[in-house]
Image 1 (cartoon, helix red, strand yellow):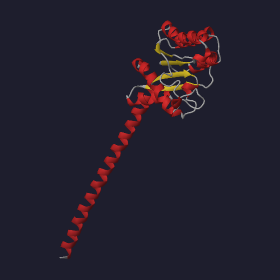
Image 2 (cartoon, rainbow, N blue to C red; image 1 turned 90 degrees about the vertical axis):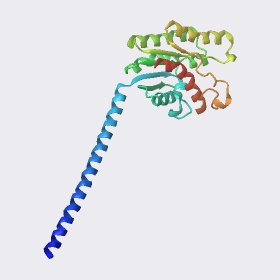
Image 3 (cartoon, rainbow, N blue to C red; image 1 turned 45 degrees about the horizontal axis):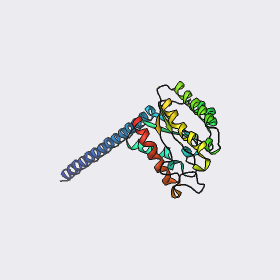
Image 4 (cartoon, rainbow, N blue to C red; image 1 turned 180 degrees about the vertical axis):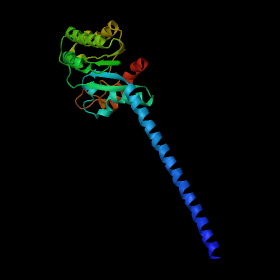
Length: 233
């Protein structure tokens, strides 16, 4: 009788051990699969980043997003759109507050050390506010464009148009406004007619300084840019 009980306990223990072992093996297999999936996802993400093309936004405080958080500036909003569409592009925000066309001409060589596949030029506003001669601004902007073309001849080029307030007088504001479409046509650049369209002159969309867009204003700027930039991608 005792032998039968021992045999029963032995069989029960063996079955229990087999069940535990099976569960353990299943858990290990599930864990291994999860690790493999995570590794694959990480590898795919890294591969996408390594093959992503660069979109360089080169401009003033408008591009830099003065007065708003960096992720609220229109270049960052463009990156969100690019990501949502799973497009292989990385936005580089090279906006600098106070930048003039002359400053940009001096700074562009350093930025061109990295690959540029799409170049978005937003310069000239500070020239206009300082009353710098339009011809001088034109020469500087052309020099910047020439440097990009020489270093990256296959890069797609986009130019953002700018306008000055009427208070500066037609003698200055008209040639200043006409400078941008003329440059875009000359260099076969995609053209954003007026970066601040729908924002300039609208108090609720402009910060207290009267110059820079609010968070909501940057959303409109992003749309103005996206309408022209998207076909280039």
